[in-house]
Length: 332
Image (cartoon, rainbow, N blue to C red):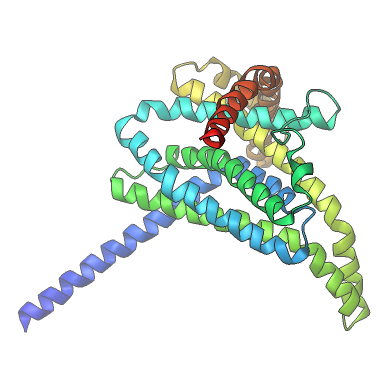
């Protein structure tokens, strides 16, 4: 009997450790996921455009297809790559983070430049006119849009997973893998659940406006339907600002990790000085806002520098390499 009690006690102890480990994994994943806010918001802001122009009945199936592609990107490709980096080449995480940060700055600055009417057309479909050629075949267009969204998700997911990885404090490889997987699931569900809600909100508004039992319900429905274009525009603005802020902050922190601390100290000094212009109870918030604003300005400046490099050098090389591969496949 005493042996059975001892065994049960051991099982209970193991269960407590497992529960604590699970709590630690979820906690780590949640905290690390919050650090990837800029890329997450951008992901949510970018994705709705991929279902624009399709029948309402096809919107959710397309989003589900992109969601499955996002899970595959994060869990099949990026999670193992992240674990290999963390355990065999941790020195590469900071440069990769900075590369991802530079990409966020480029994307954000490109959107700002496009909004004010300067710079190139941004990310257009390639080859030119492919969208117009596919528009006559809705199934082919859906295929093309879904593949394009999954490719874009791979880039954003790589940034997100690298940011999450850099903010994990667990040392056990299995805990690290579990935390990364949990973060991947949390972020993907949050992003594409939000996207599904956003793209169906106008339909929900129209339904309420037509079928609401009360005048207030119909009024709310009309308000939702009318307000969605402005909301989507606001989401784009917030996503762009978040990209520039997060991209700039990643660059600053990456430079500090590599020993170049002057810029970080300069921003910190200005932020503290700005915070002292406010009452003491508001100084913490004021310092954070000032730091985020300066990181965002830095991100915008770096992004504007990167736009001609991306459009004139990197994009043509990318298209030359991958269009060549596609041509050789078709020839075979």
